[in-house]
Length: 82
Image 1 (cartoon, helix red, strand yellow):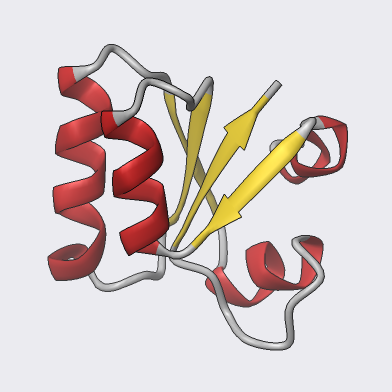
Image 2 (cartoon, helix red, strand yellow; image 1 turned 45 degrees about the horizontal axis):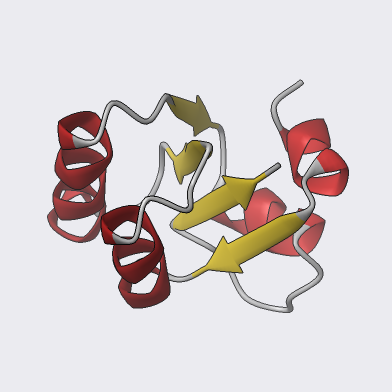
């Protein structure tokens, strides 16, 4: 399951603003996107990831993605650095 990738990553970046910065700095190896997140929020990040040829993996829920990252709130996007 994709959530396991979070625990295997050397570093994770939670949140769209920080994720966009990391993508533009070519630091990200993979992007996780919650399917239940607002497309208005995630589409910009996904487009940038595709521009930089970063693989995008969709996961079921923001709540589970946030929990996997160790935060109390949902996460729309998480950047993985290996």
